[in-house]
Image (cartoon, rainbow, N blue to C red; front, side, top):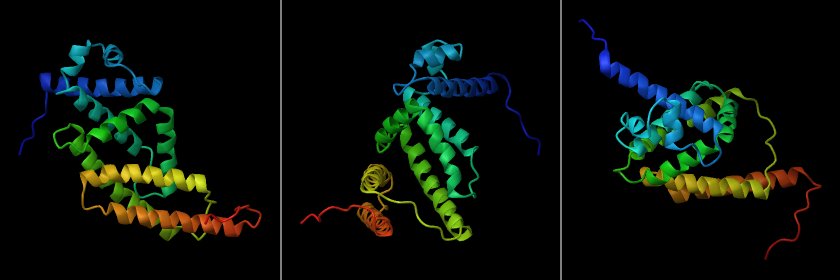
Length: 212
């Protein structure tokens, strides 16, 4: 069967859309936590702000497309079947683009609305990310010898529990099958066990008086 190749205006539209997303990521990489304006992104792409939105159904669709493009770039930096350690590069990149982190949080907050452009993106993203990370943890655990765990302190435990609570609530709204209460309870006990282990391993640690 003969295949058809997309040509003409349709192909040009796809190419222009990709150029816009590329320029948007570059603009976010150069911005602070407020992120670039649409006008700034449009200017980089050689368009007016109105011309920019011509390639997307709405502003939020553009923002979701930018996040999807960022995810695609991140996936190119690590092996899906490799060790968990290689995810550090993704975290480092996020730290260099605070505007994208803010955009991600804003879109994630809107995602539980089924009518929002971010709903299907985040529903699929969280599902695929859970599967990917579970596979990476499983393979890393199988291949890695037992090594002493890094120390866990109360401040670290507090940050991680808060972050997990915020993130899990967003996932739970998108997928009610997630047992929010049980997941957070298990994490709290894992952190407590790790904290207790770290304290016992360091006899010099001052724990202070017990709280009654």
